[in-house]
Image (cartoon, rainbow, N blue to C red):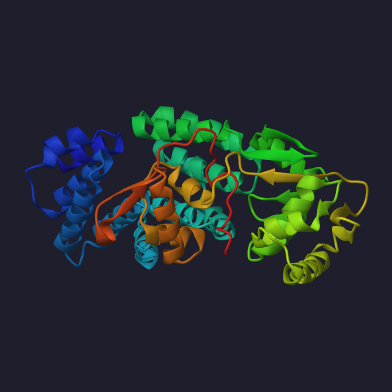
Length: 403
């Protein structure tokens, strides 16, 4: 019965698995019941059952306990509990490798990669993925592997690699015959075929797909990237995420190029001041000087009679790249666009800001009906309905601008 329940779970049939072990309370049955409940979406019950299973396995059953830990880690990832101790997953993966359970060890490593992706640590995700050889994976694990490959390529803006990986993931998912896995791949394809950004150039705007964003960034144009808060040209990037005033000035100059921007307009844009006095003009001169020094490798900021203008080095075009839909708290909405329920602490970890900043953003979004919450205290979770045309952070991630 245990083996039959395990095969049912592997085939994506949790109800058949529960029919076989629902009345049993031994450790293997508890573990299978926990995994079945997780597949059915009852994550709270699933976590409780897996913890009981870990306590029920004896000291000689290290592999069984490690498998339960991997299942716990996957539930934590799905429920966006990013505070779950990842060292427990690493220890479980090492135990599985030591005992020759290569498939579950590979699954554990994929979970590590997925968490790196969620928190924006792309280089760490790439390093963790290098040790995996998917050639011998069963269809379900192969599909999950290709989804991770596609996720990294999305963050790196490598559209061709994304399409190839998702095509392989789709084939593997259909071979697995697991409906939820097929749906996950279809969701990733839908994101890929949605607008990834909006281009603003010389007073005109249009949406870009991921392939077009990749071509634009390689074209040699001077790009004021409002998705990642940077100014870039080809392989040179000047990050301004931690300098919101300087980026506001750079964006205003980029949107107006090749024309100049009056001083009062720059003051209103950068300092949010309705009336410009002498102190604002002095501060503007200081901030423009700082921006000029930072942008020196790519462009100059020249003074005109009315204000300032951006002058790129070489005969290149200046464009502004923004999100398809711009919101005051766009990064939070982008994280919630995956359809999962997030805690404020996990959002703070993923976006690299303080939890209080996230809470203020969520309160503001909730007041306008863009997000909703359920639960209380530490169990409170936040979700958001799908926003048409809104790309997720898998496409163009950016931290919340400070200030």
